[in-house]
Length: 512
Image (cartoon, rainbow, N blue to C red; front, side, top):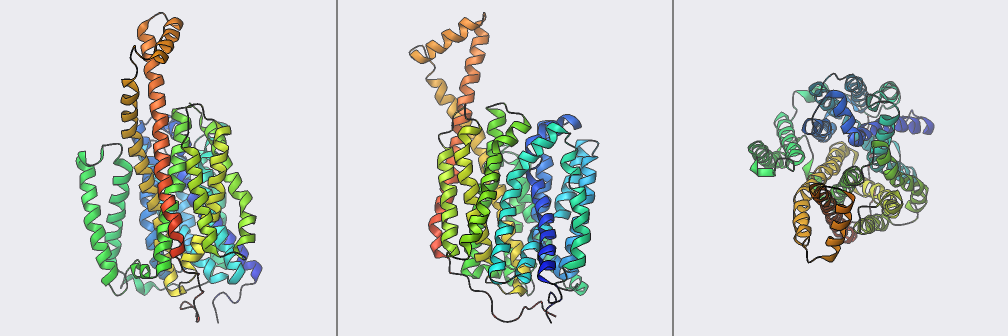
């Protein structure tokens, strides 16, 4: 008998919803601090470089544990891994809120990311075990919506909490849902049994290699833009270590009898393409969430809550498009829905490109609306097309790799955008400065206005410098959106290479 046969449809939905709640808070915490880093830094008396590690530590730890979740769920079972992950995430959330200095905060955030990361891929596995047919499509739509909506809502919710309460509540809000999930999931999610004997035969070499590879890679991507990449000795070392460990990990994954991550699943065309689309959507999700609040804070001078309100429209339009997707998903080939979603995301980036220094939530509405709808139309079909045709025996390992690609795309997208902002700002500034000569009538008029408003020419010169720098920054954000647009344009034209998904035949290999 199937291990889920004893559950009624209502119990399956409740159990799945409980797991989705855990996944939501784990994904939400990636970005919930992004609009509030300045406030947290002030509260912990930390500088900008140290504060950035509040996000970096979480991402490094989470990106390491996600691909290991398939093996861990086989060892401890899905329900106990998820329950332990939820409990650990809740405890470390409490510790983050009670952190007394920046060092303790970084340690607790790393533990939070590592302990909570397993909640993300295990939801994918459970959805494909619990549901079939149309219900599976709805479950995939729900997961896809959460995967893109939670990071999008992070800055909005974080900004509101910080402005109305304090930054400590960014972490304390996880306590009630975390405790609920830790109790509810083990009571209902009984889809497999633990096999502790796997600890003896585990691919420990593969586990070590992937931890070193992803940890060093994430550090390089996060810190590289800040320290001018390979010109810094530490970045150079972590980049080389990551490269060597990555090559050895791939070799191990393709040659070991029972590798910790199933790289052989990439032989399946749909899975390989799906991982690529997951990577690209990760770039779009995380890079745009990184760029938009940064633009509003640096160029417009918005507060955390103002930033949250300005980017909230993306989440609103995504939520509004969920029933539209659910209606179309059972009537239209998912490949064309995916193509439509990626095309909308491309159009959104094109709409972002004419950005100017005086853009506010009004000008941001259309591009963010297109992005929100595009996310909902692109992410859920990617989940179904990528994982829907895999046998359950491979699903646990493959879902970890699939989720890893999204987070890896986000890490690389943010690193690339940070580099663009750093390098292209200087380029645009010097190009603009070349035209600030007495021969430029517009400059002369601006200089007269500035000099007339101030008594000292040095003050007017400083104001002119600030105006030039503001415009250089704005042009740089347009460059970053252009690069994201190119990624989505390439992904859009590759969708026809996917095959229509067919569910696996035969009983589940996990059935007892």
